[in-house]
Each structure stands twice: as C-alpha cells, then as structure tokens.
Image (cartoon, rainbow, N blue to C red; front, side):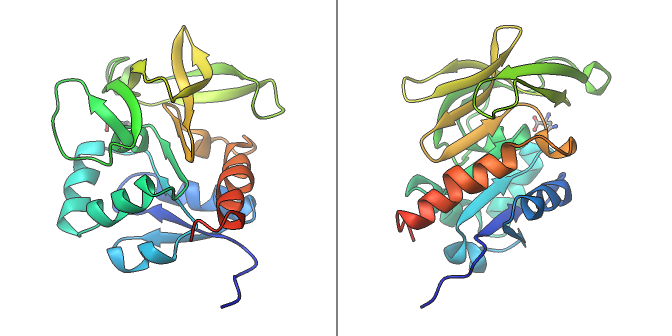
Length: 203
Ligand code: GLN
C-alpha cells in the first residue's frame, strides 16, 4: 500500500494542551490526529503526549483502553514525544507513585517539583541539538527529573536538572515547547524521529 506523503502523528487528546501540539506538528509538515480511542493507534507514525494532568490522563487512558496498545507500540519503537505531564506518562518511575504508566523512558521524576501554579516560570534553555543556541522554556507545575538511566541522553539542563532528554525513539521535555511558536523541537521530532522511523520501516 502506498504511504501518505505526510507522516501521521497522533496527539493524545483526552485532556491537556493537545491543540497546541497539533498546531506545531502541522507547521512541522506532519498530519496531526487527535487520539481518543485505541482504534487509530496501529496507523500512527508517531505520538505526542501533551502537558496537562498526568493522573487524569492515566485514568482516562485506562478507561478508554488506550494505555496498553499505546505502551506496546512505544516499546516496539513508535516515536513518542512527551512534554511535562506527557513526560510523566512515559517515565519508568515517579516518586511516591506506583500507577501503571507507559514506563518506556528510563527516568525517575518528581511531580510538581518546582511548587504550585504560581511558581510556574520561564527560563532560557541552552541546547546543542536544534541549531538554535537557546530556546525559551515555559515550566508549568513542571516535574523534575531526579535521575536518568544509562540509555538516556540529556540534551538540555536548567539549573543543573535535565529538562530535555532522549532515549532512542523517545523525546521528552519537562517544559512546554508547544506553547512557544518557533521552537524547532516538533520539526526535529518529525524529521529525525518520525520520518526516520518510517524510512526504517518500523511500521
Ligand atoms: N503537574 C502536572 C502533573 O503532575 C504536569 C503539569 C503540566 O503538564 N504542565 O501531571
């Protein structure tokens, strides 16, 4: 069967800021599709897990039968990009919680580590991966990555903490690049993760 010209990237759309992600994915040349049930998961070339409230997202993912099929595909190499709560869904371990989650990203995180909503902040983040030297990081009740496994590359830090990490086909940020138009992270995800995965025939 002929493949579509643009890769199809799902955005988990049960809760949170999925619309901003869909807009950034379209700007990056992908076809974005909001995912609220399991039936479209087999068709995806990539998946974005947005910011929001990870506890609510996890219960809705279980209720709508999305958690297990999505976890299976991500563990099998489906490119995934999580921001903030999305990173928490992907994390192998969350301090003080033992809920079922995707668990494919070998990090230990602490939720709401910088305080409450009023402690949300913006910071300039230095990274070498994007061509741009710095990007603006918007941190909203952000998690803190306390430790990373040996397979995890730290791509950017803020105040010593990893804030952008990669493990193979998984990319995750504790901040919200989707809320700042012009940050090339979605383009990098689409070009270097999703399109590469497609070429390598991961589906
Ligand atoms: N505090 C949220 C959580 O723990 C994450 C916040 C966000 O995604 N902006 O799930």
